Length: 484
Image 1 (cartoon, helix red, strand yellow):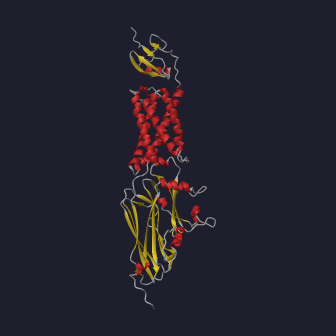
Image 2 (cartoon, helix red, strand yellow):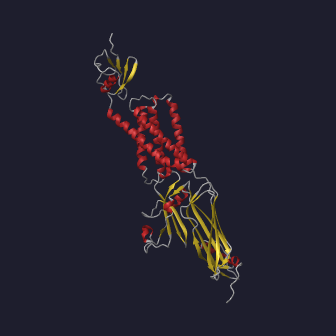
Image 3 (cartoon, rainbow, N blue to C red):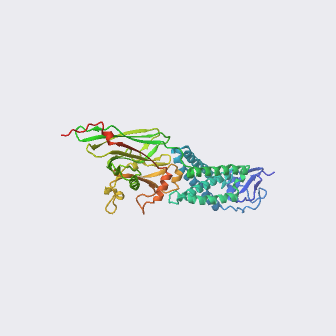
C-alpha cells in the first residue's frame, strides 16, 4: 500500500485561490504553484511529485491553472488599507479635541463618537489583510464593509457642512478625496458581497446601517441646527456714590460703583467692555418749548426723550474706562465689583451726571478665544503696528485694536470652515466696536453681512446698564464755598 498522501487541489475560486486538502483535512490554500510547494515542504512532503496523478488530484485545471492577479489584488488591498487608515486618522483629529476638552455633554459625545469610529476603521484596516488574503475569518469582509460605511457617512457629513460656506480649509483636502475613495470601496465590497460570510447577514446589515444613520442624523442636527439653550445670567449694575470735596483743590470727587455677576452655569469670554460718564448741560426755559419739536430732535439724535422746560441738552464725556481686559473669562458664580472715582470742578455747570456701561461676551461653550493673543493691544497711532496704523490716507481716532483667532465650541464646525477672527476696538471717546468674521486686515475688506451672521452663530451678546444722578442731589452734602 502506498504511504504517499492523497493531495487534492480544488478549482480556483473567484479570486484565483485554490484550496488544498490532504486526506479529509483542509491544510490551506495557495495562489501559485510555488506557494503549493512551500506548503507541502512545511507539512513534510518536500519531494512529492506534483505531476503524478496517484499523488495529486487537480480539479478545475492542472498545475498550470493559477488565475490569481497578484499585483491587482495587492494594489486593491493597499488602497483599501490606506483609505481606512487615513479616514481613521481624520476622524481622530476631528473628534479628540471635543472628546477631551468640550464643555458640554453633547459636544463630548460627538467627539467620542468620532474617536470610536476611528478605532473601528483601524480594526477594518487590519481586517483588510485577511479579506484580501486567505479569508480565514468569516467576518473580515463585514468588518471592512463597516469601516467603509463609517467613512462614507462621516465624509458625507463633512461635505454637507462644508457646503454651507464653501470656504477653503486644509481638511477639505482630506475628506473630499476620502469621500470618493469610500464610494469606490463601497461599490467594490457590494459587488463582492463581502457580508456573505457573516451568519444572518440581513440582521447584521440592519444592526449596522440603522444606528449609523441615526447617529449621523443626530450629529448633523446637534452640530448644525440645535441652538445653545443654556441661558446666560450675567448682570451689570452701575451706581453713583456719595460725593466728597477735595481738600486742596476746587474739585469734588464722585465715586462710581460698577458690579458684574455671572449666576449662570457657563463661563463667558469678555470681547470688549466700556463705561463712560457724561455731564449734561442744557438750555432751560420757564415758558417751555414745544415737546413735539424737542422730541423730533431727540429722535434724530437717537435719544427719544423730550422735556417741556429743557432744550438743547449737551453731553460731555467726563470719564471713561474698562472693567475687564479683552479675552478675560468670567466664571459661573463669579461676582466682581469696582469703584471708580472721577473729579469734576465745583464750578462745573452740569445739571445731571449720566453713566453708560456695557459688556459684550461670548459663551465659552460656543466659542474659544486665544486669550493671550487677544489681550495684546495694538495702538492705532503706532507705525510699528503696520496694518493697524492710521495715517492721512486712512484716518481714524486714537484707539486700541484687539484681534485674535476664535474657534467654534464644536471642532466639527472648525474643520469644515475657514478661519474666523474676533475683532474689538476701544476708544475713550467712541462706543466700542466688535465683530467676528474671516476678515484679518487683509484682502478686499469687511463683509458686514457675514459679520452679522457670525455674531449670531457664536452667540455674541451685549448687556448694558445706565444710571443718572442729579448734581443738585449729589452736591447737597457739600457746603458751598465761601466768597473770598
